[in-house]
Amino acid sequence: MTLSIRNQLPGTVTEVHFGEVMATVKIRLTGGQDLTAAITLEAARELALSEGATVRALVKSTEVSLATAPVHRVSIRNQLPGTVTHLATGGAMATVKIDIEGGRLTSAITQESAADLDLSLGSPVIALIKSTEVALATA
Image 1 (tube, rainbow, N blue to C red):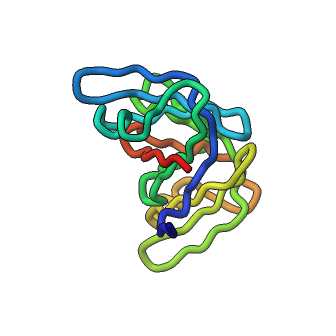
Image 2 (cartoon, rainbow, N blue to C red):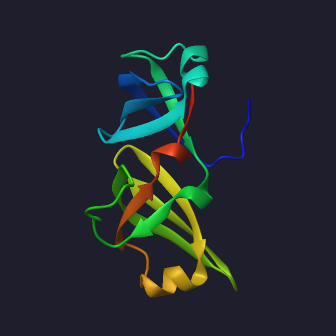
């Protein structure tokens, strides 16, 4: 299956917490970072997720926000440090490619946000991803 989702990060499930409707899944990415996904209980069961399972975390580029420093006291669980390796700006939007340990992320943000953050090649950034915006796939 080919997907239009650019951000596909391989990892291993380290924890699964089942609730009444949703499950939270903690994943150790190939680069060693931890990522949390909040998915439906039905999806977690259909994927047969358990500790040690190999998964791919999928995140649309429009769901990757950026900061220039770690953000404290915020509900966003996933904060991945990286470095800007490509920046393309247009009249309204910007595409930012970020190298993280063990992979690469793409973020689509407004051109105004990219300017406000003063992004350029080599800029250190933190990719912020809400756990509810992380989908999971198995092989």
